[in-house]
Amino acid sequence: MPVELRAFQALKLWHDVHLDLVREGSDLSARQVAILLTIYLEPPPHTVRGLARKLGVTKPVVTRALDTMGKLDLVSRRRDEADRRNVVIQRTVAGALAVERLGDLIMARAKELPR
Image (cartoon, rainbow, N blue to C red; front, side, top):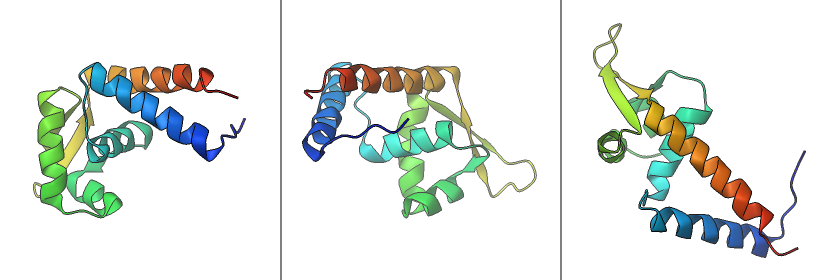
């Protein structure tokens, strides 16, 4: 069922969710969140090349974002055995839990929006 928000409500939701993320220490950039959600919401496989194309950025930009996300155990990487030039991005349990927490946070904050 579609949810209708006025522009102010949408911005307030975005603001509140981002404040919560910063406060809890998962201070990911917008690019990192976009990559994370792409990996977890769209069917695999995901490659550095494919993510770069989808986001409209270079492969080194995606690689830097994945470096940080890998250190946080949100994703892992491996070489594609079929084509060693490709790096395949894999989901992790910690990453799946982080995405689930983000969804829960968004839903909880949406319920608090002024009507």
